[in-house]
Amino acid sequence: MYPPGHLAINYLGVRAATRFLGPLPLWPALIAALFPDVVDKVVADFLHWAPYGRNWTHNLTAVALCGLALGGASRSAAVGLSWVIGHLGHLVGDFVFNPWLWPWFDYLWPHESRNIAEGVAMTAVDLFLGRELSPVAAAVWESRRLLVETLFLGSVLASGLSWFPLSTHRWWLVLGLTCWLYIVIEFDLGPFLWTWERYGIG
Image (cartoon, rainbow, N blue to C red; front, side, top):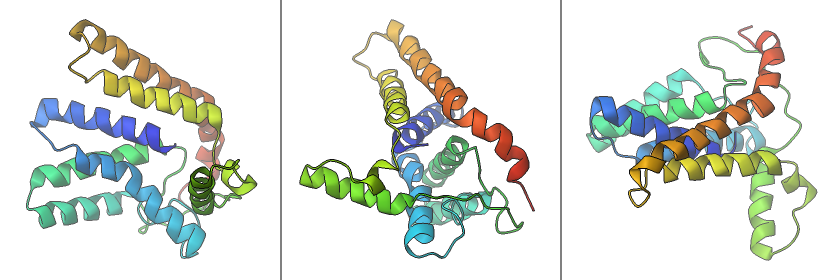
């Protein structure tokens, strides 16, 4: 999943949790939406310290440790809880394959032919210089999926804006969830069906 989808899931997660747990800060969950990919893609693609780009922070151990560390450093249980919700939300978005119980169990790691960290970095350079995306950068992005995820993010944000009539909020939310369902069916569910048996605990 791309950043817009992760941000949308975490925004919805914190909004839902606030209804039951009281006010929670949004910023830890939004940072947690991107943090696992920033860490693991760099570790795998640049440093070559991991066999796959979902490793060190794409697991439940990292969720617990990061949540406890941030909650302790900020002396705020709400901050730590918001992080945990966001970190879990990121893993839900990446449900096709996550090493949920790493490092306690070994996994059969998928093969990734793209260098995602390098592709993202090259994308930033190409956009900054105003030139067409290089092949390395273009290989990272699928335009149709990026468009749907951006619509997903925009619709869930619109569902929470006070300057929209309350009567339309649920329709914005329905549109967002429809986009999420489309993403799951069109892009993730097919790979999930065959990776379920191929990529499990070894």
